[in-house]
Length: 578
Image (tube, rainbow, N blue to C red; front, top):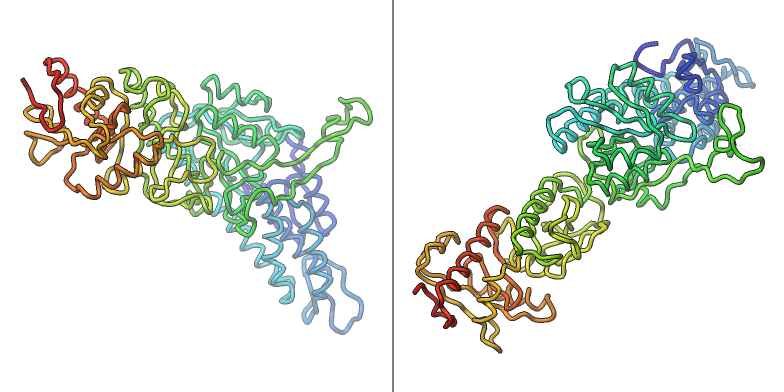
């Protein structure tokens, strides 16, 4: 057999019987609808794209079987190479009923119903028309898979870097699960061809061991280095630094980005999120079910108890043991880094702004080490424009800011410890596991009134002390003038000889502080990119995160100079060098 796992030959669908692998490569020739359905339900043919195309060939067989000569009352049940005779008439109702049976063979994978529906529309035109449509679909599948695999490989290298990568995959997503190339395994093949694969960890994939039997066989066939592991070891492989990214396929992807895939996928996604590892789903567009809103609507197939109570004909559990054996699970959209199809990255999670998250975490740790963000205090954000890929429907308003999450030590942040918040409404986007800081309203006030790219809010000691000393009780804003210091050049002022910095009251309701800042900045378009909050630290902003950080450093250094020069008469509008 060639690289295609599905071949139409002499009126039959020819494929590999996946139940025999890896020890026996045996050929199946399927000539009846019942044989097609049995092959799909018993996993002789499996994988969402593969069962879809197999189902379409089943409709070809059904249409041939229910085509008869118009001069004969009884339908011609022959399904030989010649197909329907000239002048044959299709019993459309009978063929459509068979198509219904095929589509219902496995309920979770959307590709089966999608493919059957695509070809059944041509039943009335005759079996040759159905076959032509199916062969077009077969040819498309290889092209689609290669495109999706290439896009996924590109994304993995953007996220993880141009280096040999350690990857993890689940179940089987190669040419056995499609018609050619594969989806997630296709991406592994592309990366391997680029010399970018150091190692692939293959989950055995209980209970039928598609990873051990099929994926390991395909990777060995392709010469890709790999190691097999039990499913429950995957999280530990991540914890011990053996995984750079997880690549899986899908059987159905709902409109909001929830992903149904082989049981065990959800657990992998949870572990990947905990360890900050990209979790990427590779699938054809036909796997996306935009008519289904969320994964809660997916019918998850329950399979036979014998798949769990024994293996290879040997009982491994007490007789009559009750069994829970779902064939699939549903991974919530917030755990999915990206969904990649032949069209590229078609969905990327709101949490997955990897580079920005890493930059925020790095600077937060630096400022924590200086004592400016003690414990959980302080926060950092960057502006995020609407992404070029679709995000989950109703996720939130754009543009947005990515800000450090609430209640986390700034010395231990990871790229994943951020929250996406709409700038206009200060509301966190849906589907995120973290909550934004209450001080987010300070940041959104800046972004609404300034074209800032980043904001830093810290509790640096000298600046906080000066602001607290200078503030006039009862004033809505205390303007504090500082002049004559060389460090004033660090704020990008038109006139660096002097600066007037607003000092805002520290209201118990942080939203009120944000409202004060918003009003002041709108009324004072030339205000500097720095401000004080009494007893509450400083806020600075800039075009970039580095510039915002530098301005915080300059302001703290300036306030330390004022304190160390012995000025004890710090008063609003009158501070300068001695």
